[in-house]
Image 1 (tube, rainbow, N blue to C red):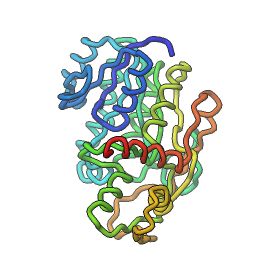
Image 2: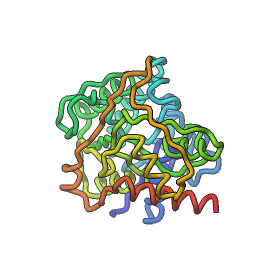
Image 3: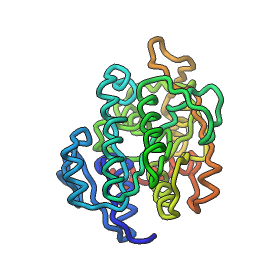
Length: 299
């Protein structure tokens, strides 16, 4: 991989940490940002909602590549109940980042979502029609469209069901949340009505960086190679932990009042496979990697 200077916005998140880990192992020049950068290596304080913060960070780092790996705590539900904050974070901040990338000659990389689709006609290729069902998907899609219309040097990576071992996260991903409930002896009820592509954050990061290394522009789907519902995912996790004692109950029906979202988000990866040497992992391989991370941390 050619030497470039990377600025990772959201360096304290699961994907941001994995991106930085891989890049530093390769000897790349990496700066990460966080609203609270204490404890992070080569980090700057930055709130992406603060344009002055963004200007300062860009001026200080002069990056070749900028990856927006930030996330808004509370996810889809928070975005639906707080549309102004969702628009500011997922659209307006990306416009500001994009304009700064254009000014500094930087490549902008946005991590987007399967929620730009309605889940009615999977599997989805990059060129398939979008129809977001909630504010999160709506503003992510509008950020994608702004980039396509206003930038030349950009990469949009749609992904889904991202997981990995990150015990300090205030917003644990699905598999960590499940593991914590098992540790607390709580009953586990899992929705079988949600289908998607479990995607380990390390493998996702490998995929993103390979596209940058191959000087790819435009839109790509980068997800795990398996399609599974949440019940199958958790059953696979329990099996690979040899936890036959865990009782896992199925919830086959969306609860009343659930924020609308695609119930089946199967993203095609043919375009990615045509340009990248990175193998996108199966669900089982991702779970195995997760368990190894967990064991190394917990001892």
